[in-house]
Image (cartoon, rainbow, N blue to C red; front, side, top):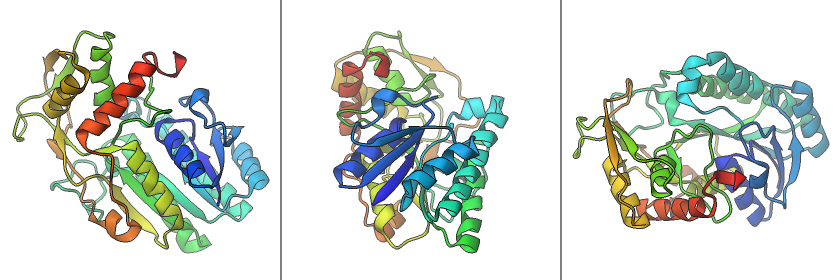
Length: 323
């Protein structure tokens, strides 16, 4: 297939573009490089530098390339930032998404796989979280993703779009070439690895009195290689709708820290901090639907492999793509 990947210079987008190319697809990456990295662009892909907030730019890209499908990653994804600057998130994630949908309509492209998030569920009352869990976002990031899901649902109903929403849980790990390089970095694993690399003295542990076996929060971690494979499957399966991407299991913060100690051989001091407001004790996916409708099974999401691949990449890129 001829596929346009928005945000293909970002963390998950770069690995998915790599996988699509490995599978024999033709890939065009559309990215403004604001938070992505030129070094994360697969050289086999055609690159168009542009911003989804510029409706003419995305319309031109789609008219020129006439893709059979779009895989849409381009978005801001920092919860804390979204609470301080909601206008950025509704402008980029929602307005930019609508520009993309309109450009697809004009170009005759009707298939889209959307990189959504478990943040659309907010703080659900039960875990594991199924796709039928009510969506009640608690921050503008989750709200902007939820709103664009609704936009695409209407485009499917009124314009014949074929849409798949992939709601990620905690993306992590690395491929041999591409890894995680955010500024600021808010994710647990790369922040622990900064301690192992000698770039910070300790890792902050927010709360140790949750109703979990060791008192720390439990999250469902999914390797980016498994996320990439889910996107590839979603492009070729006759399915529309929402799918959770997780393992159905979870690891606590202490378990992650202990595994980093084991893999890296470093002590990893912990700085105990109070709970952060709004952190649920458990966020774990009910992932049976992905197996049923996509035939997808995570193959790389055991915690040791996640940490080992991330550690290999960060050792090779101690300052991210700038090093």
